[in-house]
Image (cartoon, rainbow, N blue to C red; front, side):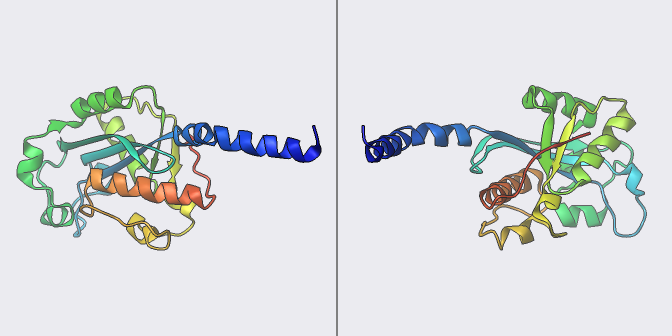
Length: 204
């Protein structure tokens, strides 16, 4: 066999198996989580006492396609009455959280949905820090052992929607809602991967 024939054979073999390779690449899955929490604009709510009021999570592949999604509201117990600022920011009302489950109940449900995944991605460290606050207050193990700060990987201190613009990602849904933000973040993450940014969890 001539050298040219070898090259052609490798070329056609690569074309033949390319769909399989693309499926393998796309099969890499990422858990992306976005939280909304109690907040204020007048200093009446100390940051260490903030609580999660919504969890949005998706499992997405490397191309940004959402494979599974999870969205749930959470009833705060330390400061059960939402501030006007919080409702205006998130659109989450007092009636919404009054009818929701508490964090320990939701945490059990979330971990069942997560399965054996021990690492997650989020935009910034807020979500990891908020999980730590909630778990500490309720005496629950954190469970997660790895975290990827996508904002840090992006390289600029901007929100996920601003990061989406230069990457050509069209954001959708409502700002400051957990599931909508998680979906948008997964799309931004996929665009970051395409341009060579490293998306790897660091051990906690």
